[in-house]
Length: 142
Image (cartoon, rainbow, N blue to C red):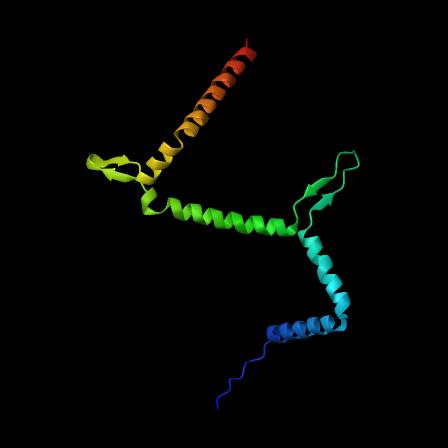
């Protein structure tokens, strides 16, 4: 029979003590009151937060709950990693053809074909917007 003896360190002892104190406090709270505390905290964690108006007036602002913030962070990290993995996959990489000429991948070509109208619309809007701003700028300086 082998037993391992763990060296007691100040950190280990403090962690064990904290754990025992935490358990002792939880055991002191009656079950019904504990359920109320847990329910109240869950509601607070998942409910929209209301920020009252400032002294100068304004409206009550609703801020996402802590739960929503956590979900948003997890979803954002997941989506970013999925997009990165997809765009770094071989089917999205450019190809080099004879003479060292780059050529877009089949996946990107298909995406551009499927979304050509939107691409053109956004490009024209951007160009027209820049041109309009340039005209306005020139008119201001007449």
